[in-house]
Image (cartoon, rainbow, N blue to C red; front, side):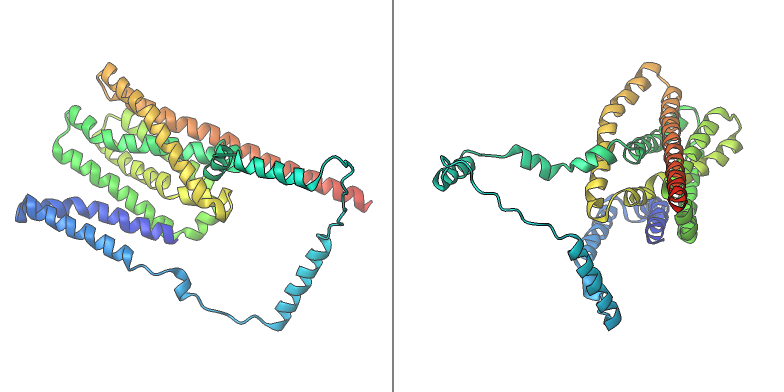
Length: 334
């Protein structure tokens, strides 16, 4: 709910900002407008500097004796279970002395130099690389962000080249922002329903909506039909953008959330570096935006296909595990 509320404010400001800048340019001119924008940016720096840590506002709650006794009992049981017998191993080789051992360890520390393996382990989390990096939760949003951003950038230019009026292009941008803002408000109001549905399922639905709406704008010849599909594109942009923190939080532990989110952003950058020039080359060779739009739609279709397969596999695997556990318990009861 908090994420949806914050992003709703961002979307509202995004819709109001162009109108405000245009009014300021007409009334005050270019230099005064730049000065005003600089003042707003400086205000953001001051606001961030005045932010207070959460621990300053945390309250201490006294724990009852019963709960503390229960915690002590649980701790004692864990300690009893974790008790490991200690076995003393003596040195059976008489040729090895303590002095030789000290020289060995000392020489190893001195000649070690820069340990690149430790640096690699410090910078890269192996568990995230093995599980998170290979999952659709990492690759899917990265490809979806690239496709959505590319579509939003080239859409106004494509409409102008197609012969649309500036007023119609402006209307398209407003409808796109309206669909984005309306979806953010809905996510804020329906936060409980979003939690029940699941972040991955909702993200796949958002990408599917983006695929259908983009194909609709390509295939429909009516102006009114295109204006109906554009807000749906904005709604899919909202789902693709604001659900990423929820996706990462659902699949990794809290202490690895920052690393996983950074890894996802890194993959997004790599996808942009690789596919960005390819999209530009297709545009230059075809001299049309049509193939580019179909490439973007194909990226979304790949996400929907493979992510749906992964979700179905995990769901069936969970059911099989439950079935095996049920049969095992049934045999034990007999």
